[in-house]
Length: 459
Image 1 (cartoon, one colour):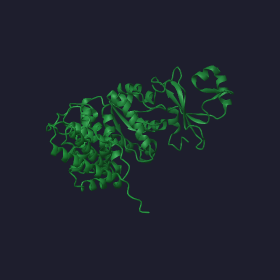
Image 2: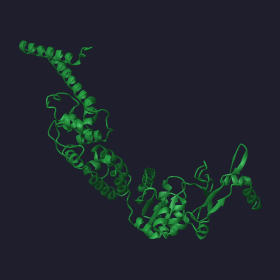
Image 3: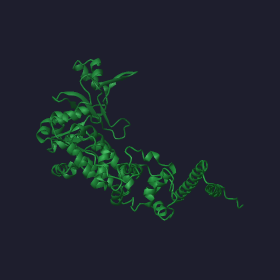
Image 4: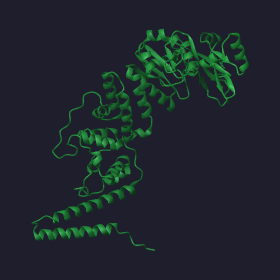
């Protein structure tokens, strides 16, 4: 197995790679010859037990010793050699009085000096990757020990380096693991970068295929993690839609917020805004860091001109649904803008956002067009519309949108009837005016009943 992975006998000896046989008798014989008690072997995790008694934890596995910072062996990690076995591929020692996996990094005892000298640490996902990268001449390399990175790991690395280069798989699982690592390490002030590995490759396979120099060039070409995250996301065709970009911006903003340095946050916000085609001020508000831009003045009575107004929460549900559909479905927006009914939303509360989308001259599928339109709005309105964009895409199509508009028209008629009936109760209303309003109420009620009355069954 070692030969197939390009590990020579000299390398195996250097890293003290061994083998745990499948037979428990050999372990018992070794323990007896070295006078190790069963209690001690259980406490160290070399043995485990069930109702039938104690037995070896590691059987028929390639064994990697785990050392503390001083190079002393404190635990083991065993790699299964039988490809068709049902057991876990990797098995680690349990937590013991001398071993806590949240505090140990594989290879750190060997790489500490190189990390301090380079001011950089390469982080891989597995032991063999660490060994191959180290033996290729890049000795500033470690891996976490079968668990996600912890704050202790971050503080340990920060004492020796300023930069971390993540060498994780390029699939979705690898990106998620890299993001979790970023979220732990970024608050320490470490600069986090990511290496773009070809699909299906890892450091071990790349070094064997391309050689040490080519892999070193990949490390030198590592990009900022947030840029890598954006590159990965922008490869998705769905990111052409503004709503997807806004949703992704919220995710990235949470990561930017973790950066310790104000300068790092500032430059990251600018890069994200430029890459996603969003207003810089919008990204800045999502992050909640730096100086807030000065509020643009708006005319008295304009939508959202009152500080702190919860504009989104005040919207009519049907109007908000139609607004979401128009922003996410080009055919709905195209139809809506052909409906020449400027009076329909007049006096109907909770339709401000729908009115903006209906009467606007922007394309929500075009990031530049949408960003330019958002920049013309006051802060409250921009925030509300951005939240609408970031919401999940509503179900339904053009027919559902037409039904929603019809419902709004019925709501407008109900509102008009209620307003007229309230005015009719006003004392001192001239008789002719009252008569005119009464006729209007009757007309609206008849029209309303005609609209909601079910069609007669033609059968």
